[in-house]
Image (tube, rainbow, N blue to C red; front, side):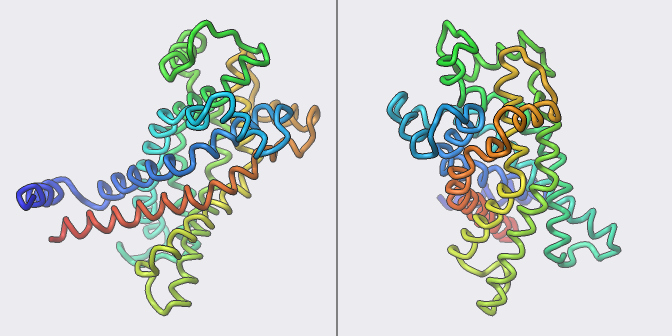
Length: 313
Protein backbone atom coordinates (compact mmCIF):
# COMPACT_ATOMS: atom_id res chain seq x y z
CA UNK A 1 0.00 0.00 0.00
CA UNK A 2 2.82 2.39 0.93
CA UNK A 3 4.67 1.42 -2.24
CA UNK A 4 1.62 2.21 -4.38
CA UNK A 5 1.20 5.56 -2.63
CA UNK A 6 4.86 6.38 -3.24
CA UNK A 7 4.59 5.43 -6.92
CA UNK A 8 1.43 7.54 -7.24
CA UNK A 9 3.21 10.58 -5.77
CA UNK A 10 6.18 10.10 -8.11
CA UNK A 11 3.87 9.91 -11.14
CA UNK A 12 2.10 13.05 -10.00
CA UNK A 13 5.40 14.91 -9.58
CA UNK A 14 6.46 13.91 -13.09
CA UNK A 15 3.15 14.49 -14.86
CA UNK A 16 1.07 16.73 -12.70
CA UNK A 17 0.76 20.42 -13.00
CA UNK A 18 -2.25 22.62 -12.50
CA UNK A 19 -3.70 21.84 -15.94
CA UNK A 20 -3.44 18.05 -15.53
CA UNK A 21 -5.02 18.21 -12.08
CA UNK A 22 -7.90 20.38 -13.32
CA UNK A 23 -8.45 17.97 -16.24
CA UNK A 24 -8.46 14.88 -14.00
CA UNK A 25 -10.64 16.43 -11.31
CA UNK A 26 -13.11 17.56 -13.97
CA UNK A 27 -13.34 13.99 -15.25
CA UNK A 28 -14.07 12.70 -11.74
CA UNK A 29 -16.72 15.39 -11.29
CA UNK A 30 -18.34 14.55 -14.62
CA UNK A 31 -18.66 10.89 -13.63
CA UNK A 32 -20.33 11.77 -10.33
CA UNK A 33 -22.71 14.15 -12.12
CA UNK A 34 -23.95 11.51 -14.61
CA UNK A 35 -24.39 8.68 -12.12
CA UNK A 36 -26.43 10.98 -9.87
CA UNK A 37 -28.63 12.72 -12.42
CA UNK A 38 -29.05 10.47 -15.50
CA UNK A 39 -32.69 9.36 -14.86
CA UNK A 40 -33.78 13.01 -14.66
CA UNK A 41 -31.81 13.89 -17.78
CA UNK A 42 -33.51 11.07 -19.70
CA UNK A 43 -36.91 12.39 -18.60
CA UNK A 44 -35.92 15.91 -19.65
CA UNK A 45 -34.90 14.86 -23.17
CA UNK A 46 -38.10 12.83 -23.67
CA UNK A 47 -40.26 15.76 -22.60
CA UNK A 48 -38.30 18.21 -24.77
CA UNK A 49 -38.56 16.14 -27.93
CA UNK A 50 -42.10 14.77 -27.41
CA UNK A 51 -43.86 17.39 -25.25
CA UNK A 52 -47.36 16.15 -26.14
CA UNK A 53 -46.66 12.53 -25.25
CA UNK A 54 -46.57 13.07 -21.49
CA UNK A 55 -48.73 14.97 -19.00
CA UNK A 56 -45.76 16.00 -16.90
CA UNK A 57 -42.58 14.90 -15.15
CA UNK A 58 -44.16 12.18 -12.98
CA UNK A 59 -46.07 10.71 -15.95
CA UNK A 60 -42.96 10.64 -18.12
CA UNK A 61 -40.79 9.17 -15.35
CA UNK A 62 -43.26 6.43 -14.38
CA UNK A 63 -44.17 5.61 -18.00
CA UNK A 64 -40.51 5.14 -18.88
CA UNK A 65 -39.99 2.95 -15.83
CA UNK A 66 -43.07 0.79 -16.63
CA UNK A 67 -42.14 0.38 -20.29
CA UNK A 68 -38.41 -0.23 -19.96
CA UNK A 69 -37.56 -0.52 -16.28
CA UNK A 70 -34.60 1.14 -14.58
CA UNK A 71 -32.53 0.56 -17.73
CA UNK A 72 -34.87 2.86 -19.61
CA UNK A 73 -34.17 5.70 -17.17
CA UNK A 74 -30.44 5.13 -17.62
CA UNK A 75 -30.71 4.91 -21.42
CA UNK A 76 -27.81 6.76 -22.97
CA UNK A 77 -25.64 6.50 -19.86
CA UNK A 78 -22.56 5.34 -21.79
CA UNK A 79 -22.47 8.34 -24.15
CA UNK A 80 -23.57 10.55 -21.24
CA UNK A 81 -20.55 9.36 -19.24
CA UNK A 82 -18.26 9.90 -22.21
CA UNK A 83 -19.88 13.27 -22.85
CA UNK A 84 -19.77 14.52 -19.26
CA UNK A 85 -16.30 13.17 -18.50
CA UNK A 86 -15.00 14.77 -21.69
CA UNK A 87 -16.98 17.98 -21.21
CA UNK A 88 -16.01 18.55 -17.59
CA UNK A 89 -12.41 17.47 -18.05
CA UNK A 90 -12.00 19.94 -20.92
CA UNK A 91 -14.19 22.55 -19.19
CA UNK A 92 -12.26 22.61 -15.91
CA UNK A 93 -8.93 22.39 -17.73
CA UNK A 94 -9.97 25.38 -19.85
CA UNK A 95 -11.45 27.11 -16.79
CA UNK A 96 -8.06 27.10 -15.08
CA UNK A 97 -6.24 28.26 -18.22
CA UNK A 98 -8.84 30.93 -19.00
CA UNK A 99 -8.39 32.37 -15.52
CA UNK A 100 -4.79 33.07 -16.51
CA UNK A 101 -6.07 34.73 -19.71
CA UNK A 102 -8.37 36.96 -17.65
CA UNK A 103 -5.48 37.85 -15.33
CA UNK A 104 -3.38 38.79 -18.36
CA UNK A 105 -6.15 40.92 -19.87
CA UNK A 106 -6.74 42.65 -16.53
CA UNK A 107 -2.96 43.17 -15.95
CA UNK A 108 -2.98 41.02 -12.82
CA UNK A 109 -0.14 38.93 -11.44
CA UNK A 110 -0.20 35.18 -12.17
CA UNK A 111 -1.91 33.33 -9.34
CA UNK A 112 -3.68 36.39 -7.92
CA UNK A 113 -7.26 35.98 -6.76
CA UNK A 114 -10.03 36.79 -9.23
CA UNK A 115 -13.38 38.34 -8.41
CA UNK A 116 -16.53 36.25 -8.81
CA UNK A 117 -17.35 38.19 -12.01
CA UNK A 118 -13.90 37.46 -13.43
CA UNK A 119 -14.27 33.77 -12.60
CA UNK A 120 -17.67 33.76 -14.32
CA UNK A 121 -16.06 35.31 -17.40
CA UNK A 122 -13.38 32.61 -17.32
CA UNK A 123 -16.06 29.92 -17.24
CA UNK A 124 -17.90 31.51 -20.16
CA UNK A 125 -14.71 31.60 -22.23
CA UNK A 126 -13.85 28.00 -21.26
CA UNK A 127 -17.22 26.77 -22.53
CA UNK A 128 -16.17 27.45 -26.13
CA UNK A 129 -13.56 24.68 -25.88
CA UNK A 130 -15.80 22.18 -24.08
CA UNK A 131 -18.57 22.64 -26.67
CA UNK A 132 -16.46 21.06 -29.41
CA UNK A 133 -15.91 18.04 -27.19
CA UNK A 134 -19.51 17.43 -26.06
CA UNK A 135 -21.55 17.96 -29.23
CA UNK A 136 -20.93 14.49 -30.80
CA UNK A 137 -21.54 12.49 -27.62
CA UNK A 138 -24.49 14.71 -26.69
CA UNK A 139 -26.14 13.93 -30.03
CA UNK A 140 -25.75 10.16 -29.51
CA UNK A 141 -27.07 10.44 -25.95
CA UNK A 142 -30.19 12.40 -26.96
CA UNK A 143 -31.03 10.00 -29.79
CA UNK A 144 -30.73 6.97 -27.52
CA UNK A 145 -32.89 8.61 -24.86
CA UNK A 146 -35.68 9.50 -27.32
CA UNK A 147 -35.44 6.42 -29.58
CA UNK A 148 -38.41 4.66 -27.98
CA UNK A 149 -40.69 7.63 -28.77
CA UNK A 150 -39.25 7.98 -32.29
CA UNK A 151 -40.06 4.33 -33.04
CA UNK A 152 -43.46 4.41 -31.32
CA UNK A 153 -44.51 7.46 -33.34
CA UNK A 154 -43.44 5.81 -36.60
CA UNK A 155 -40.88 8.52 -37.38
CA UNK A 156 -38.15 5.90 -37.61
CA UNK A 157 -38.23 2.15 -38.16
CA UNK A 158 -35.52 0.13 -36.44
CA UNK A 159 -34.96 -3.57 -37.06
CA UNK A 160 -32.41 -3.91 -34.30
CA UNK A 161 -31.93 -2.87 -30.70
CA UNK A 162 -30.64 0.69 -30.44
CA UNK A 163 -27.19 0.93 -28.92
CA UNK A 164 -24.41 3.48 -28.92
CA UNK A 165 -22.79 1.65 -31.83
CA UNK A 166 -25.95 1.48 -33.97
CA UNK A 167 -26.57 5.22 -33.48
CA UNK A 168 -22.96 6.01 -34.38
CA UNK A 169 -23.15 3.85 -37.53
CA UNK A 170 -26.42 5.52 -38.58
CA UNK A 171 -24.96 9.01 -38.21
CA UNK A 172 -21.82 8.05 -40.13
CA UNK A 173 -23.82 6.39 -42.91
CA UNK A 174 -26.35 9.21 -43.24
CA UNK A 175 -24.32 12.37 -42.66
CA UNK A 176 -20.69 11.40 -42.27
CA UNK A 177 -18.40 12.70 -39.49
CA UNK A 178 -19.92 16.20 -39.63
CA UNK A 179 -23.29 14.66 -38.75
CA UNK A 180 -22.13 14.43 -35.13
CA UNK A 181 -22.06 18.22 -35.00
CA UNK A 182 -25.75 18.75 -35.75
CA UNK A 183 -26.91 21.18 -33.08
CA UNK A 184 -23.44 22.73 -32.67
CA UNK A 185 -24.68 26.30 -33.15
CA UNK A 186 -27.41 25.79 -30.54
CA UNK A 187 -24.86 24.24 -28.18
CA UNK A 188 -22.49 27.21 -28.49
CA UNK A 189 -25.35 29.69 -28.03
CA UNK A 190 -26.36 27.72 -24.94
CA UNK A 191 -22.96 27.31 -23.32
CA UNK A 192 -21.43 30.80 -23.45
CA UNK A 193 -24.10 32.59 -21.35
CA UNK A 194 -24.93 29.38 -19.49
CA UNK A 195 -21.47 28.83 -18.05
CA UNK A 196 -21.13 32.50 -17.16
CA UNK A 197 -24.16 31.99 -14.90
CA UNK A 198 -22.97 28.52 -13.81
CA UNK A 199 -19.55 29.53 -12.53
CA UNK A 200 -20.68 32.99 -11.47
CA UNK A 201 -23.48 31.66 -9.27
CA UNK A 202 -21.25 28.90 -7.88
CA UNK A 203 -18.42 31.25 -6.93
CA UNK A 204 -20.80 33.92 -5.57
CA UNK A 205 -22.60 31.36 -3.44
CA UNK A 206 -19.29 30.04 -2.07
CA UNK A 207 -18.19 33.60 -1.28
CA UNK A 208 -21.38 34.27 0.67
CA UNK A 209 -21.00 31.05 2.65
CA UNK A 210 -17.35 31.88 3.40
CA UNK A 211 -18.36 35.36 4.56
CA UNK A 212 -21.14 33.98 6.76
CA UNK A 213 -18.97 31.21 8.27
CA UNK A 214 -15.95 33.47 8.72
CA UNK A 215 -13.60 31.28 6.67
CA UNK A 216 -12.20 31.07 3.14
CA UNK A 217 -13.99 29.57 0.13
CA UNK A 218 -11.91 26.39 0.22
CA UNK A 219 -13.08 25.42 3.72
CA UNK A 220 -16.82 26.05 3.77
CA UNK A 221 -17.68 22.38 4.27
CA UNK A 222 -19.50 19.70 2.29
CA UNK A 223 -23.13 20.89 2.52
CA UNK A 224 -22.41 24.52 1.54
CA UNK A 225 -20.23 23.24 -1.31
CA UNK A 226 -22.97 20.90 -2.58
CA UNK A 227 -25.57 23.68 -2.30
CA UNK A 228 -23.29 26.10 -4.18
CA UNK A 229 -22.88 23.57 -6.99
CA UNK A 230 -26.62 22.97 -7.12
CA UNK A 231 -27.34 26.71 -7.11
CA UNK A 232 -24.91 27.21 -9.99
CA UNK A 233 -26.64 24.45 -11.94
CA UNK A 234 -30.10 25.90 -11.25
CA UNK A 235 -29.00 29.33 -12.55
CA UNK A 236 -27.44 27.68 -15.62
CA UNK A 237 -30.60 25.81 -16.60
CA UNK A 238 -32.96 28.65 -15.78
CA UNK A 239 -31.14 30.88 -18.27
CA UNK A 240 -30.44 28.46 -21.14
CA UNK A 241 -33.29 25.93 -21.01
CA UNK A 242 -35.17 27.10 -24.15
CA UNK A 243 -31.91 26.94 -26.12
CA UNK A 244 -31.27 23.42 -24.82
CA UNK A 245 -34.76 22.40 -25.94
CA UNK A 246 -34.02 23.60 -29.49
CA UNK A 247 -30.70 21.73 -29.44
CA UNK A 248 -32.39 18.48 -28.38
CA UNK A 249 -35.02 18.83 -31.13
CA UNK A 250 -32.34 19.38 -33.78
CA UNK A 251 -30.26 16.43 -32.64
CA UNK A 252 -33.16 13.97 -32.27
CA UNK A 253 -35.41 14.90 -35.18
CA UNK A 254 -32.51 15.17 -37.63
CA UNK A 255 -32.63 11.36 -37.47
CA UNK A 256 -35.67 11.55 -39.78
CA UNK A 257 -33.65 13.41 -42.41
CA UNK A 258 -35.05 16.87 -41.66
CA UNK A 259 -32.14 19.29 -41.57
CA UNK A 260 -33.18 22.55 -39.89
CA UNK A 261 -31.00 25.17 -38.29
CA UNK A 262 -31.35 26.83 -34.91
CA UNK A 263 -33.54 29.77 -35.98
CA UNK A 264 -35.96 27.67 -38.08
CA UNK A 265 -36.33 25.07 -35.34
CA UNK A 266 -36.92 27.74 -32.69
CA UNK A 267 -39.56 29.59 -34.74
CA UNK A 268 -41.20 26.29 -35.74
CA UNK A 269 -41.65 25.29 -32.09
CA UNK A 270 -43.08 28.69 -31.14
CA UNK A 271 -45.51 28.78 -34.08
CA UNK A 272 -46.82 25.22 -33.78
CA UNK A 273 -46.61 24.53 -30.04
CA UNK A 274 -46.23 27.88 -28.30
CA UNK A 275 -43.48 29.27 -26.08
CA UNK A 276 -44.41 26.89 -23.25
CA UNK A 277 -43.06 23.97 -25.33
CA UNK A 278 -39.57 25.45 -24.96
CA UNK A 279 -39.83 24.81 -21.21
CA UNK A 280 -41.13 21.25 -21.44
CA UNK A 281 -39.02 19.07 -19.13
CA UNK A 282 -37.81 21.96 -16.95
CA UNK A 283 -39.15 20.34 -13.76
CA UNK A 284 -36.96 17.19 -13.88
CA UNK A 285 -34.04 19.36 -14.90
CA UNK A 286 -34.33 21.59 -11.83
CA UNK A 287 -34.93 18.56 -9.59
CA UNK A 288 -31.83 16.94 -11.06
CA UNK A 289 -29.56 19.96 -10.89
CA UNK A 290 -28.99 20.11 -7.12
CA UNK A 291 -27.87 16.50 -6.55
CA UNK A 292 -26.11 16.20 -9.93
CA UNK A 293 -24.21 19.50 -9.89
CA UNK A 294 -23.67 19.27 -6.16
CA UNK A 295 -21.99 15.89 -6.77
CA UNK A 296 -20.05 17.39 -9.70
CA UNK A 297 -18.43 20.15 -7.66
CA UNK A 298 -18.02 18.01 -4.56
CA UNK A 299 -16.12 15.37 -6.54
CA UNK A 300 -14.17 18.03 -8.44
CA UNK A 301 -13.06 20.03 -5.41
CA UNK A 302 -12.16 17.04 -3.24
CA UNK A 303 -10.31 15.11 -5.97
CA UNK A 304 -8.47 18.29 -6.98
CA UNK A 305 -7.49 18.97 -3.36
CA UNK A 306 -6.34 15.36 -2.94
CA UNK A 307 -4.16 15.48 -6.05
CA UNK A 308 -2.66 18.82 -5.02
CA UNK A 309 -1.77 17.38 -1.60
CA UNK A 310 -0.22 14.27 -3.18
CA UNK A 311 1.83 16.39 -5.54
CA UNK A 312 3.16 18.52 -2.67
CA UNK A 313 3.82 15.56 -0.35
